[in-house]
Every structure is written in structure tokens, then in C-alpha cells.
Amino acid sequence: MSRISFIIPTYNCKEYVDDCIGSVLSQISSDDELIVVDDGSTDGTKDRLQNYIGKMNNVKVFFCEHKGASGTRNKGLDEASGEYVTFVDCDDCLKEGFLEKSTQLLKDDIDLYIFGIERIMLEGNREYWTVRDGLFNSVHDFADEYIVRRHLMIYSNCNKFYKRSIIGKLGIRFREDLEFGEDRLFNYEYLRGCGQIMTSNLIMLSYIQRSETSMSTKHIPDYFKNMLMIHKAKMDCFFELYKNVSEEQKRDFLAYDISKEIEMTIDRFKEHPEEVEENLPLINSMLFDREFDLDVPMDMILVLGSSNCGYKVEAAYEIATKNPAAHIIVSGGNIHKSGDTEAEFMYKQLVEMGIDKSRVLIEDRSKYTTQNLELSQVTLHKLRLNDNTIGNKVGIVTAGFHLPRVKKIIEREAGLLDYEIYYFACFGENTRPDNWYQSAIGRNAVLGEFRKNIVRYGVTCDQILGN
Image 1 (spheres, helix red, strand yellow):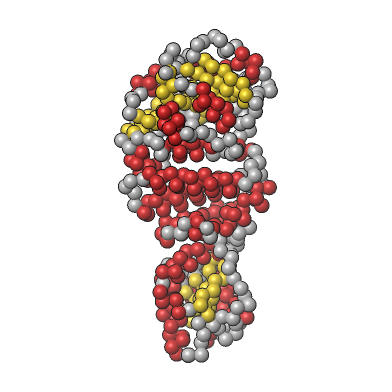
Image 2 (image 1 turned 60 degrees about the vertical axis):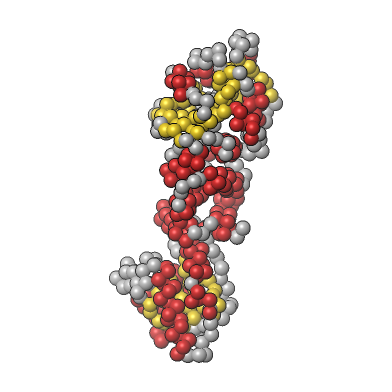
């Protein structure tokens, strides 16, 4: 049995494949092996690889029909005989001196080693993705650390030593039907079979940016749908493996991860405008709630204030004009930019727009949404006690991206169970479903609220999507 099997998938990389292979051959010993699997190259890479056939007993070269990096990695795994397996992409180079230093760490009871990566940009600048030296006595300790810190570099396959026995025992292979994310899924499966894990600040390889071309410049159909699948696999993995993490920390981990996936998706829109139509509806279904029916007769209208509540006043006015007998409660005790409280500002606006002041009631003590609802329902009760002809249909007016939170709070407020609740979503200038992602203001407001929904109110992505 070899000590380490280095697997290099190659595809149309004749200009730098020799550098990659050379960086490995200059370091491995007779106890290691190098497996090169070509993925149907058409640029002369195959001719370069012919030079390595039969030259060394521990070098194997295979030629396959083109089926992608996952297929070539799987072929490499099928042919590997090492105790440990690692991967090096053909446009990367193993860092000089790495193997001598890293093999000093090898121990029989370590199931996964994670190292750092050096990234070399086109302009020659360098950045380093690193982890601290550490030993995790169990995968559960590792999961706890990652959930809380998120710095353990779990995504890539090219900065790790894997035990081949675990890969074989679990039957792990790279999914060949995915255009991206197959490396993450491989790692999530592998972690489930791990015991001890070691992290090292050694730099394993140099990731060299060879051109402007990358995954970000390629159109990928259903990008966000695939990202959600990968996100779910990550959550399933770590929520299965954690041992000593609080529910709030878990929710914070979930919120951080899914919001980062959303940001990565919308960052692609400038380069791929066609992906807006493909991905934005699914994203918006998680971030917004558009429930409203202006034709339903309302007995009372509750408007929840905010620092920018002018657009809510406009929505409330439209509903009020269709329901001329309805009472309007404006709620909000924070100071609006006008100098008035939010409730006072909305009251004045509605009166200026022609709503009879006798219809508008002010609740100006609340500082946050739960108080808005708690204090406003006291006003609702008083209205009905003083006038038993008032019905129980209540329309709640708030921002579309606030609605998931409002609904979650109302679910917990038994006092509102006596009412028939309707929701009216409205949208500000920078937070409409069609433009929120285009400005920093919109992104910060909408994604900040999304994370708050998950962390503070326990709203899950499945709940938001209705799954």
C-alpha cells in the first residue's frame, strides 16, 4: 500500500500541466503514488502526458472520454492504493517543501488533514487562505468549531488528506451530474465518517489564476436552486454532527450561510443578466411575502411603523379608501426623520391625504415589532369594547420583507387569535422585489431582515418556502 495517492485531473492544460505534475514529482517518495487522469483533452495535453508513462513505477496515467472533473476524480479514486488520498488541480502547484513538512504530521488515528492555500492573482498579487494548527479529538468538536467560527476551509478538495479506507467504507464518490459544488458534497459525506481531524497552517498548494475565465463568467442554469441543495446538505451535515452548540448559534450559522449563498447568486447578475429571471423569483419567495387582497372588507387597519414608513402610509391610504368605515391604528414610538414619532408622522400624513382624523388612532410607545403588535392589540380590544358593531377583520400593513417576521410573532401572540388577520405587503423605493439587490441600501435592509427572521424568530428556510 502506498502512503499518499496524489490524484491530478487534467483537461486542456498543456501550457501548465508539466509545472503541476513536476511540483508533485519533485516531492513524492517511492512510498507515494501519482495518478493523472485526462478528461478527453483536445489541446495537446495528452501528448505532454505521454512523457510520464512508464518513466516511474509510482506514476499512473489514464485517458478518459470527456465527462468533467468529477468523473476524472472518481477514476483516480478507483485506481488509488494509498492510505491517504489528495487532489491537485492541473492549474495548481504543490507548494515547495510542503510534503516533507506535512508527512511529519501523519498519524494512524487522524482521519482528515486540512491545510492552507496560496492564491496567486493574474496581476501577481497573493492572498492566503489559512487555518490555525489544531487537533479535534472528534468530528463533533470539529462541527462545533465550524458552526461557531466558520473558518475551517471545508469546501475545497485540494487542501486535504483523506483516508482512503473511509472513502471506501462510505462509498463516497463525486457527483458527476453537477456543474459546481460536488467538492463540498464530497466533504460533507466524508465528515460523517471521521474521528480525529487535524488542521495545519502549512500552505499545501498555490492556486494560480491563469485567466479571467472562471465559474463566475459562465452561465449556469438553475444556479440558486443548486446552491440551495448544497446549502441544505451542509446544514444536514453539521446539524447532525454538532455536540455542544446552542440553538441560537445554530440559527446564526444557518442565517449566515444562506444569506452568503444569496449574495453569491446576485453578484452574478451583472455578468449574467439572464440569471436574474432564472433565480430571482426563488430568492424573492424566501425574502418577501406579497399577500394582499384589497377587495376583502376591513374593520380595522394596523400600520406598523419604521424609519422609512411613507410608502406604508400610501398603502394604508389605498386600503382605507376602500374601507371608509375602518379604523386605522398607526403604531411606532421611534423618532422618524421628520422629528415626530413614527406613529405621529403616519397620522399627519393620512390626515393630509384626506382621511378623517377621527378614524386614525395613534400608538406611539412601541420600539420594535413585538411591541407594535402587543400594544396595538390593546387598542384593537378597546375599539371593539366601545363599539360592538366593529367586526374582527384586521389588515396589517408592513414591508414585504418584514412579513415573515410579523407572521411568526403573531403566531405566538394568543391575544390576536380572536381576530381574522389579513396581511398587506408594501415596498419602499430601494426594497422592492425587482430592485432590492441593485443597491447596498436594499441588500443590507432585505438580507439583514432575513437573517434576523432566522436568528431571532426561528424562521427556517423551509418555512419561508412553504416546504
